[in-house]
Length: 83
Figure (cartoon, rainbow, N blue to C red):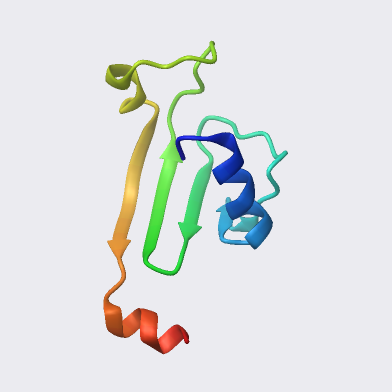
């Protein structure tokens, strides 16, 4: 997420899981944690590799913070099945 407010909304909606359990926005993540985000049009699962020391992270460094395990865009038929 680009903004904390977006991440909080997803957590409040129950689409974010941390190590298999529904995550609250206030939950602290640690290295090695697995995060899953299951929205209407995408499923993303990744592992936290490094927690940055500061608030600002360069784009070059950002790609080293996580390892993507699974990234599936849902088809239109999958989305229709949800409705």
